[in-house]
Length: 117
Image (cartoon, rainbow, N blue to C red; front, side, top):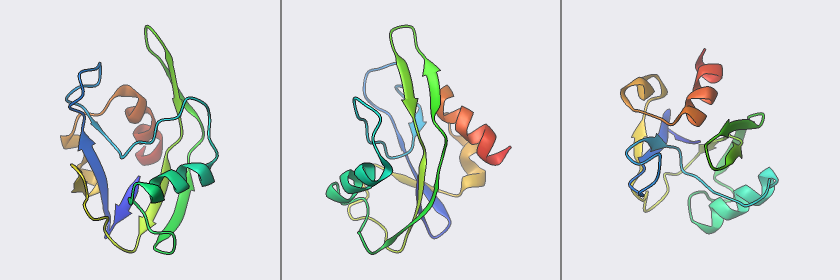
């Protein structure tokens, strides 16, 4: 979760998959569980964050969702950014209490229920 000036970056999935049309946070996929440091290095390489312009806010416990053909596991890493990424890809910047206007996959909804519940 990338936070800049009290707004969180989200994007609508356009890929043709089961989550097509739903929203997600900027996502880094890996084949195996990765350390937070590794994920942050990948985000820096994508120019989503600047090494000295980011503060680690939290790392969630592991979340899981069983799909018919695979098990999805992941963590939510919340970062506070001092500078907005350029370009900001196809992201929208949304105030967290406005998330209800966006449809997220069940995997993310699990996290949001705990985080905001």
